[in-house]
Amino acid sequence: MSKTSLPAPDHTAGLREALLAAAFTADGLLDRLGAAAYAALARSETVPALRATRGVSPLDTLVRLFLLQRPVPQEQARAALPLEECVQDGWVSVEDGLIRATVDVRPYGGPDGEDWFIVSDLGCAVGGAGGIGSHEEGVVLGVGGASTTLASITVRTPVASALDLGTGSGIQALHAAQHATRVTATDLNPRALEFTRLTLALSGAAPADLREGSLFEPVGTETFDLIVSNPPFVISPGARLTYRDGGMGGDDLCRALVQQAGSHLNEGGYAQFLANWQHVEGEEWQDRLRSWVPAGCDAWIVQREVQDVTQYAELWLRDSGDHRGGPEVYAERYEAWLDEFEARGTTSVGFGWITLRRSAAAAAGNPSIVVEEWPHAVQQPLGRAVEEHFARQDYLREQDDAALLAGHFTLAAEVVQEQVGLPGAEDPEHVVLRQHRGMMRATKVDAVAAGFAGVCDGSLPAGRILDAIAQLMSEDPVLLRDRTPQAIRLLVEEGFLEPVPGAASGEGPG
Ligand SMILES: C[S@@+](CC[C@H](N)C(=O)[O-])C[C@H]1O[C@@H](n2cnc3c(N)ncnc32)[C@H](O)[C@@H]1O
Picture 1 (cartoon, rainbow, N blue to C red):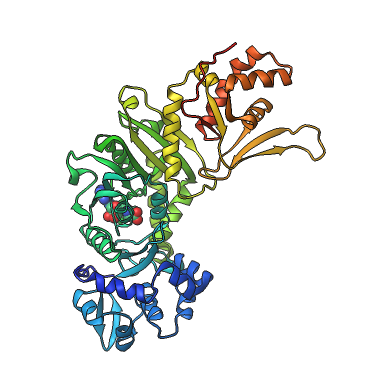
Picture 2: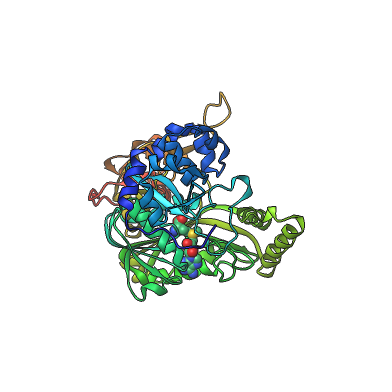
């Protein structure tokens, strides 16, 4: 890893053309390497890809040079690249007739089949089982699981302005450049801004407004329609690596980010973050998160995973390769993590997604704040599901029980019913409604709710459907109307039922 000057972004068009001509793209790599070696490379394991690229084709050369970071003979490089230009601009260097890459250039497929390239520091994605290859503080990483998670939960409606805070190699800015007229990308680390410039240029995207500084400091009082950040969220015993250790103690950096985002959002704008948070003895984690939500904003916070402090320490010790430093160093560092957690009363750490939306209702003192745990598989991308969540909250906020009973609903697409019980039993023990898209939720319902959901095709108001169910099940219709709105509310909130716009009939109870 070197902190020497980075390539000049001047002649990226020629390099981009050469990379595309050689099929140095996400699809081209998959074809050339095969699924197993391709997947191994995503795990930073290089041996299978080295074996698959023993030829001299331009694609083999580019894979070896930029992904596997092996030197290649000059003539071989010349057949794959505008070599003189690349040497001059600093993408590669020459030594003893061999060409070496100065940066990692990784093909990355955009959501609509775009051929993009992410430029980052050498050595980060070729560590294999050993963790990242560099312990340097300012190392700039390429795409990781967290990067793609944030990209795929981001709301992608066209907007005028977007902010990528802590841009790193520029992946979020690259996505935002497709649907935001203006993209501002910030980072505490000036090298990250240079990498973002290269990523955007080499991917053929519009340049971003690049600004150095911490948190919202570089944007002053500016406001945005979209804010995204995959911040340095790791709760660690002291800042060592800028890309992951926020250096503010505990989960303070994530808290500050969320709290400050409110005043940088335009009306209707979204702020979306990945975050880690402490679970502290004597405190409900949901309360901790709720207290972070800034005034004027609705929030949807999803805890995806919880690790106890030992799992958490081990994860990040391995991430930085500390387990390779010898048993004594490892034990000392491990102790430091546990000391830190003990001092803060932290028992475990939650990982998840935080979305804020600035709304008039929240500004008027009626925010919708949902904090939930959903550790199960979801169907990415989820940007639409995020928007739909807030739209449903808007709808529910305005409906009292009478309005819900007068409303018309349809069963959401791809919801199925599962019956659970002993084989051969006459009645199921319980019924589960399951989604096959978006959050892929499952919820246990009683016979009334299952029957209700089953006939929701938008034609009848909810109250009428309940009256018919009451008759069929010999129940008191008034009692059923009384107790069911809560269940309808939950089914709407979780996206099993969709309100039919403008179809309320004025039909009330009784
Ligand atoms: C986990 S990386 C995310 C990089 C990239 N946005 C992605 O999604 O892959 C976090 C980034 O935040 C930057 N950073 C660290 N502390 C920061 C701070 N106080 N303010 C702004 N950026 C910061 C790091 O330099 C790093 O580039």
